[in-house]
Image 1 (cartoon, rainbow, N blue to C red):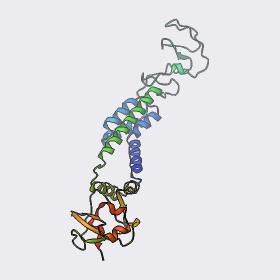
Image 2 (image 1 turned 135 degrees about the vertical axis):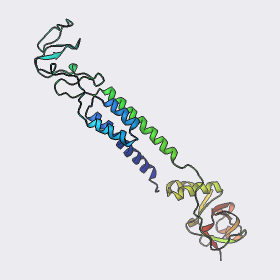
Image 3 (image 1 turned 90 degrees about the vertical axis):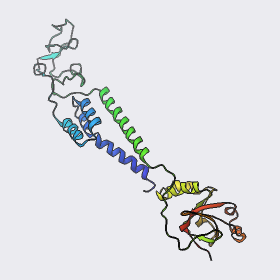
Image 4 (image 1 turned 45 degrees about the vertical axis):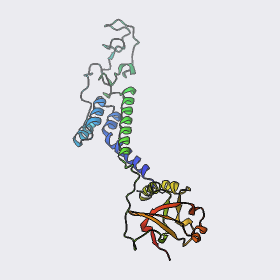
Length: 274
């Protein structure tokens, strides 16, 4: 996994989120009168293939469950804005509630005559159902909440252990205390085994930015930055780790700062010093 893995993981989650809620997006785009129900089916049952397909089919279906508006939709009739009863388009007073209304000469109903998605009434001319902004906002907020939950769960599933899985390679010789060894040019070490394991964790995951941040301090060293041919003294061996230090005066003189401490590194990076 490279250093861009967090970004790749985020992109993957967003793509999965979009695919998962495709039925809800389609229903909102088509202004489906059953959009809330489609969203709930998508949310609760979308993780099953059958539930997701059902929500998708429902979202692309025609809005058949609409109020009969053939009489209301006639060019000579309209809806009273006060009592919602049918009156003539040219009427200036409602015969049902007695309210004064303005005359309507055009055949296109006003916005006041169209009903919200939640009440289940349709646009009297086109038959399309308008989705109130509150419902659209509710769907958006619920979708965002689900995305956050999915992201949090995915984040928690990422291994957080700081102990790397070392790939032990058979050494060409058996290390022992007081042995003089040289390290590969790509080797690095840290003053404590914990610091080394932290660095090795990022190294194994190819997270080189985080690895560089940990190995650039005074508690770690990079072999490529030291004098060539420097020989380390083995202090102890622990499984596939080895503790080394510059215990010979000649080696200490080459790197006095590094020689003031001891370091843990991988045993497979060590070879017999000449």
